[in-house]
Length: 341
Ligand SMILES: NC(=O)c1ccc[n+]([C@@H]2O[C@H](COP(=O)([O-])OP(=O)(O)OC[C@H]3O[C@@H](n4cnc5c(N)ncnc54)[C@H](OP(=O)(O)O)[C@@H]3O)[C@@H](O)[C@H]2O)c1
Image (cartoon, rainbow, N blue to C red; front, side, top):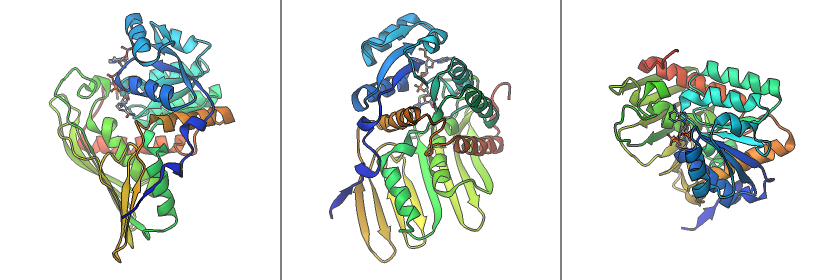
């Protein structure tokens, strides 16, 4: 069977205007973001900020040669060369670091989960509105070719009415009570780290649910280790999102329609392929593989900033708030409370 490429379902990231990025937090994902910007967009990394000058310098040397290295986040956001700040710190610090960027008049791309909860997101978005800057949650999946292609097919009714979306994102992490994944003080837990992906997928296709249910269990540190969240959309559809810190499974998504289904068999939240199968026996295969994937969200930011937009139509502020409201409800069901909440 022939495989149809869907890479042209979104614009080529290289075609977006150049943007000068400032990286806030010299951690793991910041490294791959900097590489994606450098190798797969027309933008550049102007500077990196770390709590340690030595870590900033080492990061620049490894991931962003030529970028200025700052030994504090304050110095990073004050750097006049930086147009957009990429916030890549633990979830516990996203509010403060996003506010730091926005109040310095910088545009900001803030890693998922955008903040610990909806109330913190409201603070950031109100500050962004007051400062007149662009802000977007780094939900990289939204901007990928296969997701754009699936959305178009679903919108055209190609699999009938969508009645189910089931997604999973389970990643096995070594138990380390002090790590950002297990420490409630760093807003750890599977939901905010990985469960956010299948939930965002469901909200993208089905919108805001009428009811949120969740079952699962916590780690001995008090964050969610493993859970399934169920979303009910009246009598129209049900979605499930499974997340885990304990096991690794293929990260798949299946979208059930009244006349067929879409199946993304693995790595559903990064650039990949999928199949469509119809109840009458038809089947099509699509390929959307590309390296990394963060170049697509970086390009979306670049296009929005160049156009003077304050939010992206693909990941608008309201969707970030809707997603956090669902996460808040799921955490409440599971009994996960972060310090100070
Ligand atoms: N888009 C994706 O594919 C993806 C994948 C994984 C994670 N993420 C998201 O990216 C963010 C960062 O995740 P990561 O895996 O890159 O984390 P990480 O490797 O632990 O890096 C986080 C960085 O935050 C800074 N930081 C500031 N305050 C901190 C504190 N109190 N404790 C620890 N670190 C602190 C540190 O940088 P300095 O020491 O340099 O200041 C640290 O290197 C999270 O929001 C996560 O959900 C996204």
